[in-house]
Length: 114
Length: 119
Image (cartoon, rainbow over all chains, first blue to last red; front, side, top):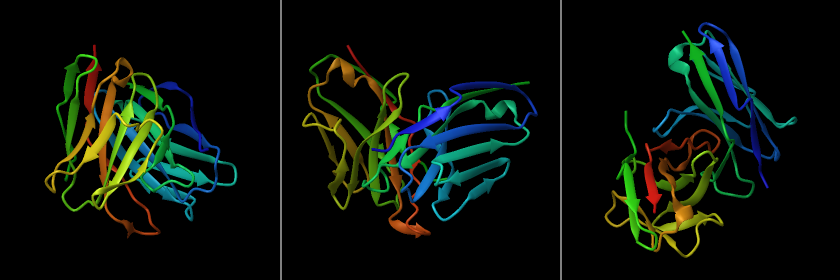
C-alpha cells in the first residue's frame, strides 16, 4: 500500500532564502508524482507533475526532482517570497489504482517572513 | 483559466440528515473525483467517476455515499445520513482523459472545497 510522508511538517524561513521540501513514498512503482499547493480555505493547486521517466521538472522558481529507486522527491523553491507561504503537498498514485487515485502526504506548512 | 467550482462553500447539518455537495468540473474534462480532508489530516481519495459510472472507490466510500452526474455539467456527492465523522472539507477534482499530456499523465484540477460540519 502506498504511503507518502513529508518532512518537515512546518518550515519558517526569511524572505529570499532557497529551501527544499522533502517527500518520500513507499511504493516506487509509480508513473508520476505531483506537488500541490494549498492555501488556507482554498483548494489544491497543482504545481508540478513529474513523470516516472523524468528526473526533474521546473516551473519558474520551483524545481521538483524524483528518485524512484530511493522513493524520494524534493521540491526546491528558489529565492522564497512571502507569497510562497502555504502548505505544500506531494501526492503519488495509489498502487494498482486509477491515475486519479492519489495518496497525499500530510504536507509541509511553509511560512516565508518578510 | 478554467476552474472547478463547488457549492456550497460551507454547509452545517444535523447528524442523520442528507447532504448533497455540488461541483461543476472543467467543461472538456472527462474524469471526475471527490476527495475529503478531515481537519488536520491528509487529503483522502473517495471516488473517481468516468463515463457515467464509478471507476474506483476507496474504503471510505461506503453505502452512505453516492455520486451522480445528473445533467452533463454538474457532478454531485450525496451523503445519505450524515455522521459526526463526516465533518470535513470535500474537494471535487476533474482531469482530461488519460493519454493527453504525455505518458498517461493526468493533472487533476481541484475546486476550492465545500466544508461540511455535522452537528
